[in-house]
Image 1: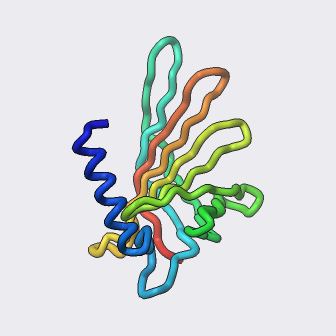
Image 2 (image 1 turned 120 degrees about the vertical axis):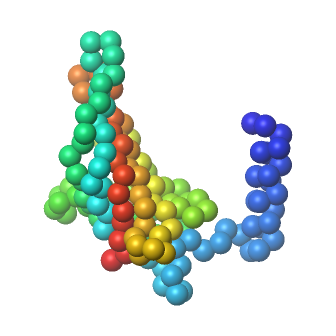
Length: 149
């Protein structure tokens, strides 16, 4: 890590500590967001086969993030029916939160949801999936938005 970047990070950390810790994330009018409906209309699906990577457009994707507990760093993701829900870990950031899902098979899904865009009233979001089929890497990345529920 470059010394200048490290100093900047330490300075920011000290500033935040002096203000009483991490600033509240997603506190809109003192109401903490507990549920989000996310829609990803565009994306790319990638795979590795016969010694090379290839990509193609991905089908649209939608899911809900609920029971969001920023302090406890947990949430729940539901896609379709309640039977497809899973526990999520939250990694907090300035102006965004990362929702990390580790699937039973060890595959990894990451959704980053940013602060509200004042122009649209929606939260820009990026969703990435990392898995493998028959020993070959398969991954996808989607762009979309999440709406406060």
